[in-house]
Image 1 (cartoon, rainbow, N blue to C red):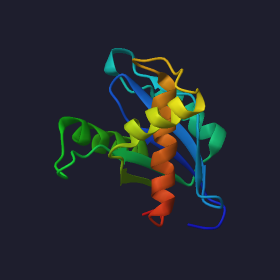
Image 2 (cartoon, rainbow, N blue to C red):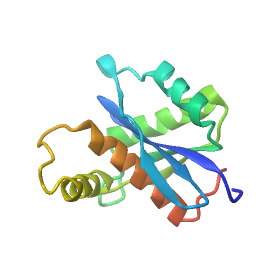
Image 3 (cartoon, rainbow, N blue to C red):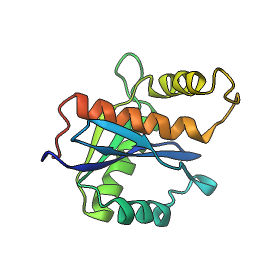
Length: 145
């Protein structure tokens, strides 16, 4: 990956997908608006709009493994999403371990809001988790396939 590559990170879910942009130069991720998945359908047109706006070099998708490294149904769905995403948009798609990213995202949101973040589903959490996924990708050497 060159010194100024752009990535788009995804925190895959069946109800919504967190999205973040990232720059290899800084190794950082920035949350974007989460995408809703009506009737558990992937919002391909919304994803296409994000990709057109950011023109990423690589797509980074979080792999939700269990704490014992085993895969779940959500892991299998995230892998399928990554394959479809890379194939549909002809952009390299890589997966990175996302364990505990949602918990860390909730903690960060609580810190940012002084503990006043609303309880229950908060779409900001998913995109903060996507930013953490991007940063994990960079921290681990972040290279495209």
